[in-house]
Image 1: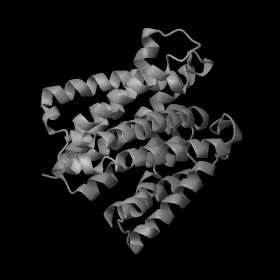
Image 2: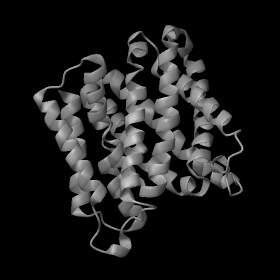
Image 3: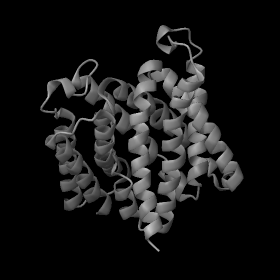
Amino acid sequence: MFLLPVSAAIAASVGWAAGIVLAQAPARQLGAFEFTRIQLIACAAILLLASTMLGGWTTVAWQYWSSFVVSIVAGIVIGNLAMIECLRRGGPRRTEVLLSLKAPIVAAMAYLWLGETLSALGILGVGVAISGVLMAVLSQTDKPEHNEKISGSIGMVVLLGLIATTSQGAGFLIMKPAMLAGTDPIAASAIRLTGAAFVVSVIGLWPAQVFRCEINMTPALLGRTILPGFIGYGVSSTLLLYAFANFEAGAAAVLGSLSPVLILPILWVRDGVRPSLQAISGAVFAVLGTSLIVLT
């Protein structure tokens, strides 16, 4: 029965879209480093417990330890810090649509590193996705007072988004041999998050101002910080894994990549401001381009 895995993949997209909207306020309060540190520690603990309960440790291909190390540093530490800073500066809609560039970037890296080829339809998908991202990032509403505020320049927001999605894509791609060797995805995620939490915690011991949190932590703020991470790392990732296991992988990947579109009605409900036609069109083109890449 395809209804459950299809629903799971779409729910994963909804979860990621909702999670990044929920993350914006606590990320701005805490700063990228402290927000990332708390999320990594909490989510690592959740996935460590899940992998232990499900017996995933026996599947880990430890001979690929160097891939895990690179994936931890690039995909999690650098990727997450850049993503949260992009979210703080550019807002959830721009961040989500920039992250949709992961598919064309991973396709390009797979071509350069692994010799994997991309069909003519896939190349078209790359162009469509990039065009859609540019449309969405540069879009504005008809009422200037309702436009998303940007901290700094739009160029810095785009740069941070590109660093985030490239780092995350590289972290994913370098794990491919370990996953093909039979490593359980939940165990792999637990190792990556635990390693990243350790690295970030050690870096945080350096007495530099950039690593200090200027506000007092409260139980409410802690909960609002952990919740979006749990939704993304815990719930959405698990739902997408279920969809991959019980449905055609390419179709599941497309349905799990709808967050740039789904975030628009969430923001509309939250802010009461209708997205511009350019923002909607750009998000649709970004998802369409991703679909063409994934399904070729």
